[in-house]
View 1: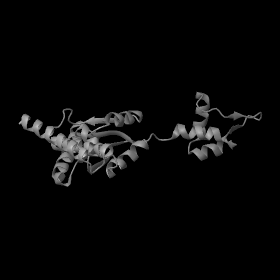
View 2: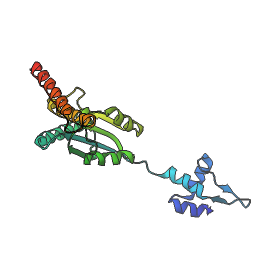
View 3: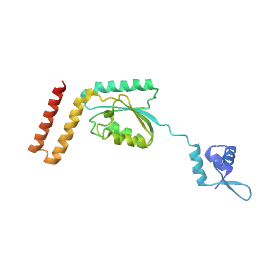
View 4: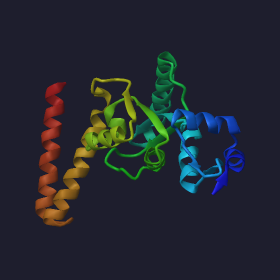
Length: 209
């Protein structure tokens, strides 16, 4: 057990602070018959939690494009996010960006960002569009962020029309993966299914034009 003097020294507070905590009922020591106060390890843990500085959580921005051909678009996306943060009064602590499919959740910077999220170091994440974060399963990631009291701020609420080609590529990836599992990667049925999907997409695009 600690005497009041040793306990104050260990915590880096004054003896008077400990007496005040006792009077306020915040931290009551064991009182011996002699009138002396004694503090235990349990008191120490409680006191450390009382004086521990609150964890400063970060504001992050995350940007993504699907291919190296879109590097200029990535720069443009990041610049827009920075300007958005300035307008909103957000101080950017860290910037993360990836070049890769929205279907790939093993993106290097995406994973680094999640390391911070899971260690409770993030207050908010700023993204340009929902699909920059994840094409499918966004609701799952959003729920996970809510569990850690993290706000996801979406700069543009409307769906982005310029990423139509990327969506088509993602769809074709899904069709290719599942058809390969159903029919085998070299089967006639798989090739036929992929060609049918391609034709439907082509017709749909032509109709929109």
